[in-house]
Image 1 (cartoon, rainbow, N blue to C red):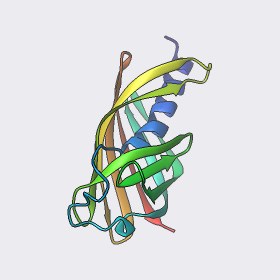
Image 2 (cartoon, rainbow, N blue to C red):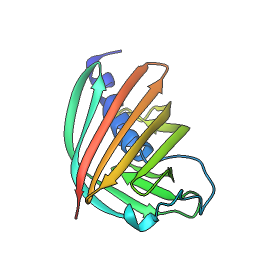
Image 3 (spheres, rainbow, N blue to C red):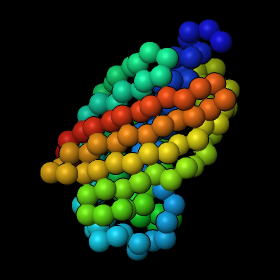
Image 4 (cartoon, rainbow, N blue to C red):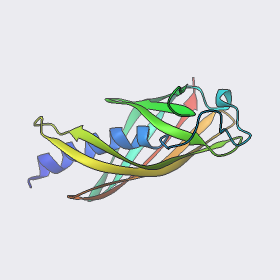
Length: 145
C-alpha cells in the first residue's frame, strides 16, 4: 500500500473517528443523569489521527440530540455516529462497524470504540479505529461556538 493510500485512509478514519467518538448503543432516555442539552452544539477545534505517523487538522464537531441514540455526532464526511450519555458530562461510543471510502472511492470497514466529555463548553473525544490495515487513535477537542 503506497503512502497516498495510507494517508487517504487515515484522513477518512479521522473523520469517522470523530463521529465515532460520540457513538454508542443504548436506549433513548437512558441519559444516566446527563441532560442531552449539556452536549448539544457545534464545537470548533482540532483532530489528530495517530498510528503510522500522525496528522492534525482543524474541524467542526456537531453534536445533536438523537432519535436512535442519546446523541448523534457528525464530523466532516461522517454523519450521525451514535453516542450514549454516561453521566452529566460524559458519553461513550460502543463498538460500531462503519464503512468508509478512501480517496480512490474504494470502500473499507472500520470498527470504532471510544468516549468523550463536555466540560465548561469544551468537548474532548478519544476513539480507536481498527481495520484490516491497522489501528489508529483519533483525538479531538474543541470549544462550543
